[in-house]
Length: 558
Image (cartoon, rainbow, N blue to C red; front, side, top):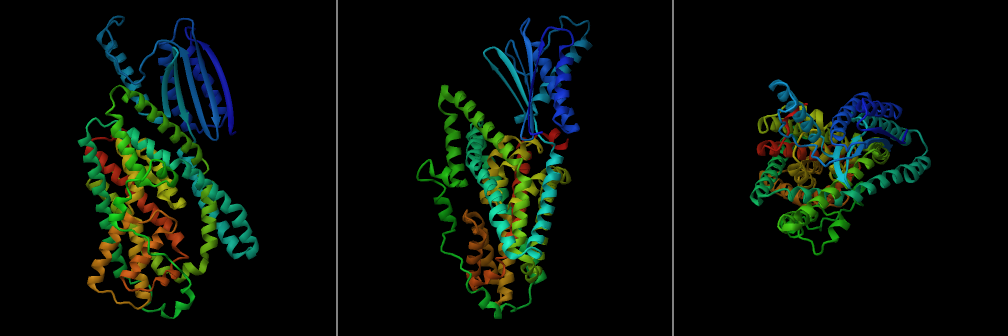
């Protein structure tokens, strides 16, 4: 059932009104097939919210309860006319009306527990008071486990269907399915994500920055985040270089007689990827262009400026803060709706990759692919070690909680496309303050390219060996510096990693046309690279949040 809407009304001062509300909500959630574990959690939140609504309801007022479902997300709304209150505030309770001190302490503990429980829900629970009516909205989405199962199933089915298309179906049938079915579905989904990337980045960072009362605190956090990104980038470069030199993937000089097969490959290496150009281009020439191009660095610049300015305009500060918070919630909700279609996009993406790359490309560079995957796996282990050593947190808990984000990044092959999912994971699962996650994740999607660095190192050294180029120690030093700088200036265009690889090959005196050997497999490797990039983003955000004391440890350990 995709769409459902049911409303009930109960007299606030009648006996057993709470039981009536809860019975109505439970029956409605069962009708729409809500996961049992998720239903119990929703009922708990609904009960705690309903208690407050009933306590503050006007005499003779009705409590209205609505349960509706749209595209997999259930929403429970409870409202009543009554005196405005703060559901997240724990007040001191007077001893009048209680027979002893134990009753007072028990009532205070109950109210405090209720306030903590409700406040911890973030975007899943919203309270408002308009025209004398108190309202609570509780979001009850698909169970996380179900969404993960659907995505894994789509990944597996996409692999099978892609192999079936490439190995069994006639070429014209396979081409038609790809052109008229798979590609349109994937394109529509990616376009839907691109619609929200710019507003999600902008409004989340403005909302985040406007909460800082001290600019020095913002500078300190920004320095820590960038420091973590640079640190992991250096580790990725040296780690992948060590593995490439250890395994020596590919027979020395085997590609010298293959030039004719790849000579038609053209890669434009004239794009300015220098660090200076990247810094200069952070400042846009107008306010609209960054939104049209989804230029993340320029959006971050505009958002930081606006966020700082919001806190400096006196009487309008609170109004604008509420406005940006509302817009941030709006686009995060839109993101949640779009994310329901991730399994369909995963199926189409994986099937297309299998058709476009083909089994021959996998076999021809299998050794290099193995080296790359081992390097990515080792880098993921490094993230776990950093979480343990620098964050003093359980790394197994970290990986368990971010598995949805890792899988989303792996299948979508885009740090930007996975950004909304990763931001939600940081706040809802890892317990990271939005002050940290809403700033570090968008920034990391642009400048933290550990997986790309691994690809550039392993591919560059593999192609140099394939074309019989001897790598001297001085060339390795140049390669290290070049790749670290390229990781911050990699162009945000399709095939940006291949553009950077062309620049790396020029530094190594390897023919640029040699990219033809890896261009077929690059889409497959990009899945692992993107997963490494986003895992590093979330690990850095967690470590910085822990060092700043901006993490809910109870939520992280739950």
